[in-house]
Image (cartoon, rainbow, N blue to C red; front, side, top):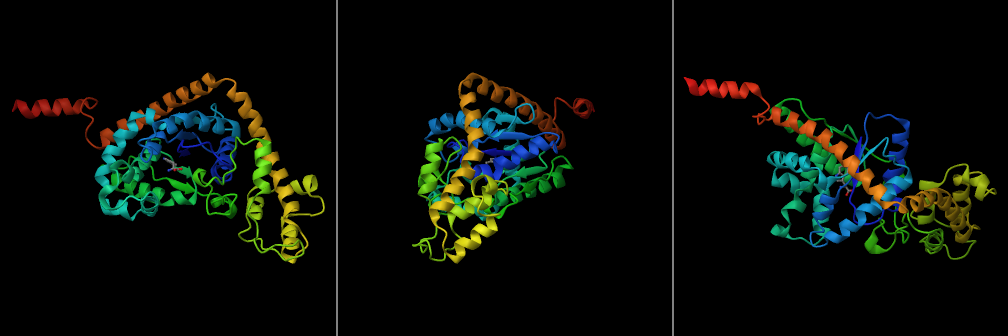
Length: 358
Ligand code: TRP
């Protein structure tokens, strides 16, 4: 299993329900031989070229988020993308297998080009080709399973195409990965606290894993609900109501006896809200309690980790070493398949010598 995140800011609860929580479960279930989790700092630089310090500052933030949610360096290899030169090497060969028009059709690239206001030919080549480098991220480690959000689906599809093309030309060498999407619809894309489509730092609508209890409380209190639910007795809408979306993502049955014993489960709470007579404040208080229960242990671990940053850096350094070894192994197989393993292949020396001895 392999996945990664761009270190452009601390991770938020959207990352948590969309991916981090599942990674920890998979790690602890021991389903996978090996787990690679990395910080895609080189990919982050594809659209932060003039802001290298932003990436540098967030490498440790994200590592702290990883470790505090329960990723365990003894079970998962945590590493930094830019420190694996084999990724560049593999990307370079993958570039021969993808056309410009195929990249232009990648829906993620398309929307990101629009979002960032690049027009026509003014797109930086590195940014435009990042799906290729992402295919290298995945295949260099022979990942079979890539847990990511649905927005990454086009990246995975493009990766699978590259693998098929490569294996077709050079013989079976690389592994076609499967995407592993979040299992709960509310977790696919957690909206921001303002009800906007996605949590994003620039919109200021995130709840971060590192937020204090007070900050979480405040953010929940000011959350977007149903704008037509003006009086308590008005019937309310649950769909598109951010508070309920978050409950769908975070709430478990045991939370009710603990924090809201008047209701047996989330369905009953929703039914009451729909009928009218249930105030936003009561639901928000419940959500705040549920979030605090989830986030408190994460905050406590983070505070411990922050006391020894050199140890965190050492974890990344060791993980990166392990990842490099795995990557070097795949690259040597790739070079053999591509017939460019001149110095490793004894028959090459013999065959070339013979050819010129005639
Ligand atoms: N594109 C991913 C994101 O923005 C990060 C990423 C880079 C990634 N390479 C990857 C995710 C390989 C999974 C596998 O979140």
